[in-house]
Length: 253
Ligand code: IPE
Ligand code: IPE
Ligand code: MG
Image 1 (cartoon, rainbow, N blue to C red):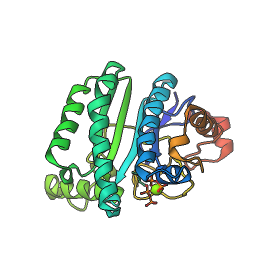
Image 2 (image 1 turned 120 degrees about the vertical axis):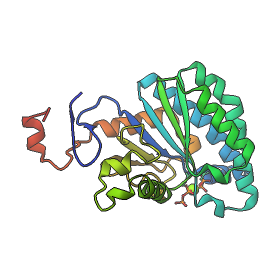
Image 3 (image 1 turned 30 degrees about the vertical axis):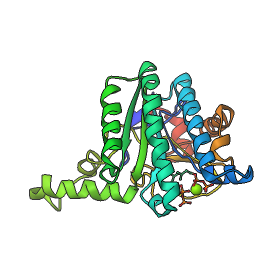
Image 4 (image 1 turned 90 degrees about the vertical axis):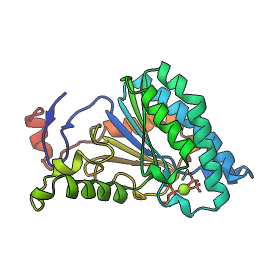
């Protein structure tokens, strides 16, 4: 795979399948509403689709899957919905971690976890520890995550850890302190549910990512829909600032 350096991380110029897929799983509420069901029914169905997505990534050899499950702004939702979402998160962790582990999936949760209650924080730590040796797929759940929060926590750490070099910090200094420091930048970003916005997801890392927006609601985003997103990605030409001609002249440059 041809790699070159840029201001963004080393990035593959050509890829059969994306290495890293990041998803905003949106549209659960509307899916439920269409069926005259409570919003939470959409979230329950949404968890099933997460399972299917993980399976798809394992089958297709995608190495990193990052899913936006709860944003730092989602606390603004009605208290009842927030609490049901938390319960679902706990239940999913309790029920799925064994299976993820058996399938070689490493689980991480990124975000400001201090806002979650202690039993949930403990479940997260256990799940991360149990799966820490796995390498088939790195599954990251963004929970109480915000891209701006992430950049600020990195800056604040830099300010204490490299105070003496203030004014001379590099992109690498910041990047290594971001929550996704362990992963290459996303190659493909998917947002289901029809909105075309980032909603404070991975702001720094999406600098050169290919975007795919679909009106399909998350609970309907099955493997066939995922394959459409991958096919669309494979037709893109990732130039990283170069011209099209430069790419065809020197494909490995
Ligand atoms: C996404 O679905 C899931 C979360 C934000 C937790 P929504 O709940 O935002 O569904 P819509 O956008 O209202 O349809
Ligand atoms: C974004 O979805 C966050 C998640 C999917 C977790 P929202 O549905 O909350 O996004 P906005 O607020 O409509 O942009
Ligand atoms: Mg939404």
